[in-house]
Each structure stands twice: as C-alpha cells, then as structure tokens.
Image 1 (cartoon, one colour):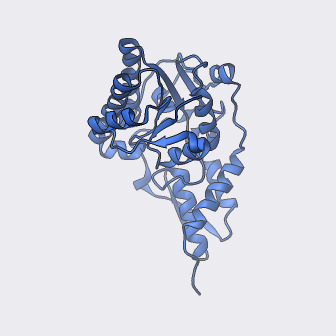
Image 2 (cartoon, one colour):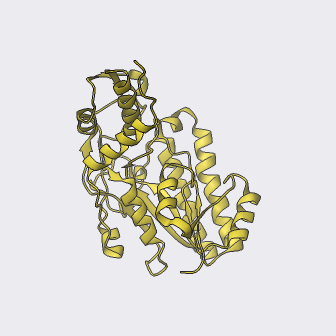
Length: 297
C-alpha cells in the first residue's frame, strides 16, 4: 500500500514496538498532540495512508493524581489528531488506541464490544470520551476510524508506572544488589495479559482498509491474577527476593477481574495471541536487567 503510517507516541512503550514492526513503512508524528497547528502541519507534510494514535497519558495511577492533565491529553489530543486528518488526509485510516478499562466492572467477563461502557478511573473515562470523539468524527466527517480496546499488554520496555514494569525493574536492581525486598500493591486483581508485540501485530492487520472499521477488543480472553504474575517473575530472579505490600501503591478504585472477548477481532483478521505469558515476562525482565548497572564488588 502506498504511503506511510504516521504514529503518534512513537517514542513510547507501544509506539516503539509498533514502529519497529512497521519499519520503513512508519513515521513518527513529531508534534505535541495538544498543538493543533503542529499536528495539522505534520499530517499535511507526511500525507500518510494511515494514522495510529497512541500518544496518551496512559497510567491509571497517575490519572487519579492529575485527572485534568489526563482528560486534556487523552481527549483534546485525540480531537486534534482527528481534525488534522479530516482536513489534510481524509482518506487515511485512523486507528485510535483505547483500552479495555472502559468496561469497568463489567457484568459479562470476558467482555464483548457491545457491553456497556462504565469506566471507574479518570484514565478510562478519558479514553471513553475520546472514543465518542472518534465516533463523531466518523459520522460528521466520514473519517475511516478504527477503535481498538486493548486489554493489559506487557513486554520489553514497560516502565515503572505499571505493575509488571515496576516489578521487573525492582528485581533487576535487587539482583545487582544480591537480593532484597520487592514492593507491591494489590495482588488480588485478575487481568487479561497479552504481549505488546502481539498487540502491535493486531494493529498492523487492522490498518488494512479492507478490514471493516469499528470497535475491536484486543485481548487473550483469559484472566490471570497479579499474584500469579508476580510469582512467575520472582521465580525468574537470580537472587533471593522477598515481597512486601506498599500502601502507597494501592489505587483508589480497582476492578477485580478484567478480560476481553476478542472473537470479533479473530473473525475479522484471524488474530490470536502467539507469545505465552512466561516468555513475555522473561523478555521484560531481561530488558530491565540491561538498564541496571552491574554490581561492583
């Protein structure tokens, strides 16, 4: 297909993996998504065949601490991207990365796309509002908009704002120190975990204009407790690790069980996860180890 894929948030966790997967077919959108004029100029300059909008304030924890910034970045930033594409490259497909968090405490788990949206955090609520903006753009300006609701995705490069990234970094540092105590938050939640590289593969397939636009869950369909995820990571450690709960890591609101029904996605593009959780965690920890200086005796 002619034209490149313009990626907002290309320097972030998902953006880095997606850009690597797309290779020369991708280009970063080098503008702050809150700068409407700069975003418009970037789209005009690149004339992409598709735009993947990943740039966001994506931490649930941070959204409780600064809800205003979360709403501004996630909603206004999305509107700026949609308006830029509508004005400069209306034939381009826009893939908006939403989240499975929009379902909140769903009555049906694994949750299908037609389940009601009931977000419980500022982050999830801002993503739900941005979805509404996408729908309005599709109806009002006939934009070709794809909304993806990816559930939890992990992998190499996940940062410390997120549980798995924090645990991997802590373990890597503790290994360098010969062992120690790993601090954690609530471990009772169950989450649908998919490797970020599998999620990016789904995004690539959904950029095909032959795939009908709409809303698609990107998920494994199963849920694993964060306690089990932690155990798997600790088992990979090369030094003795103790675990201790840290009250500062607890969130104001939590969803006990979150998992997505991705049967619509499978029917549309034949996608299903390929990378097992154990490999995801091994690769995540190995990446974290490379960022920690070796202990000097």
